Image 1: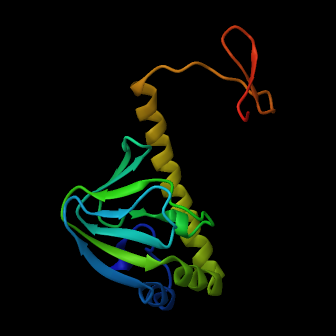
Image 2: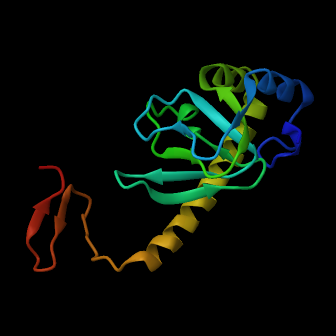
Length: 167
């Protein structure tokens, strides 16, 4: 699969794509291998070429999303100014992945602001879709109480007592 065929990069200039591709390394991972842990320093951005990667959060590694379609991106923290990864990425099948150096890729995106902006728009749209799917999954997982903050850091418990979220 070529990078220009992915939804994230389709239609961007050939020169830009070459520069982007030059920041990547194609790697193979075995089922069960960890790519990164939640809380690790966010240094790389990834595009799945083949396989399946589970993204999970928390101590019990609760599934948040499964990256399973060629061309899907993950490890976005390295591109958006987050110092640490927000999830753990584990291969659930033998996988081939394009691994981008986050700092080098950001330099390419900054040099070509038109193509870079379009890539970020597409990345934001993909993450938005993922978030909406996650909301749907959470809605079925368990009912939750409504907490209102009224623009402050205080929430109201069921009985109406104010409780600070940041003790």
